[in-house]
Image 1 (cartoon, rainbow, N blue to C red):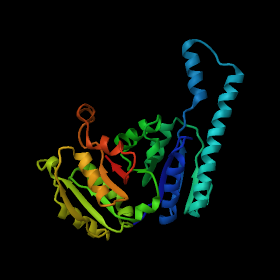
Image 2 (cartoon, rainbow, N blue to C red):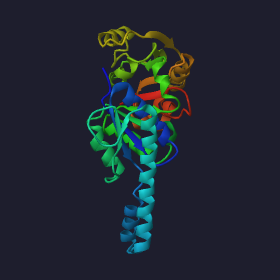
Image 3 (cartoon, helix red, strand yellow):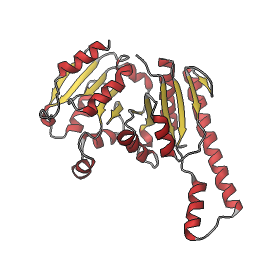
Image 4 (cartoon, one colour):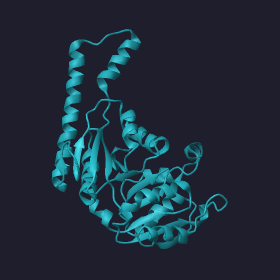
Length: 286
């Protein structure tokens, strides 16, 4: 049970080292191949499109300057990726077999490039620090809701993934997909805690029986989780606080189990999870 193909997003900003260090660590632990997808904005194309829309044209000098800025961004991402690979003692650059990390060339629009690659990826890694910025913020929603790919939102020391893990279990399809995607990471955990917020369970459409979850984990050789039943009107805050209380380095949860409209109006657990500035790393799936 392991990860074999991992994607990592890099936008040329300060969050890149965190995402790429985590991805390289996973490559080393699972003999995996990591492909870094540059998602910085295509400034030259955006300016050309704007110029065409307004009936104006960009000068050759302006286009050259934008192209040079993008080359600098690509080189910055490649430098950070090489440092992360060297630090984890994995190979850097295109090649066969793992553990290995390479950086793809920025070509397609970021959202399209991510979608095409996510179809056959075991996990996508995004830095927690990058969540508030476009285009990563928008790509996260696309990956979870449209591409249905699991996402690890990473920050801090990747060695925390070897410590305790927590699962937010409500029996929903989203939570089930998150658990299935997290199996390789749960197998690495020193302990597993199953957290259940009893005030928000929907027993009419889901089966939130923790014994069924533990039986599934045991079948996969992961072991069984220690159940903790919680009460609280704010589901997301209650679950995160419990995970932190267990010193969890990984928090596994379904994302947007309710409709996006409902969560946009009333808030939701997923928004709370994503709004944490620190705490456990998040593995989310929809």
